[in-house]
Image 1 (cartoon, rainbow, N blue to C red):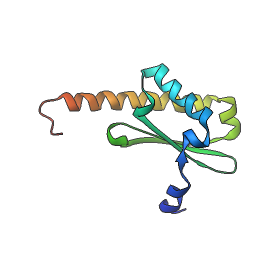
Image 2 (image 1 turned 30 degrees about the horizontal axis):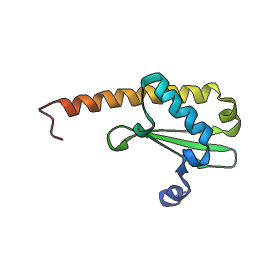
Image 3 (image 1 turned 180 degrees about the horizontal axis):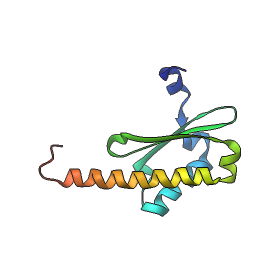
Length: 109
């Protein structure tokens, strides 16, 4: 599928699966105090599940993606939990690095 077609099918996770959106954002906040405005979550709905993309960092330049079946989402599977935790960890690392880049007086913003 070309990128333009994929972009048109991609929708906010908050619209496609509000429960999953609140689960993910709740975990981000619980683990690292990362707020809903610090990440962008969207997905492509397929026949058997959702292809989730989480974007974060300065201008949302970093992203993590993975496909989960509806069953894995409903059960909050270990794969889903692992994806959310590892992405939250990466998000925190990126946000800390972005903060120190911003605070470095020698950096050119």
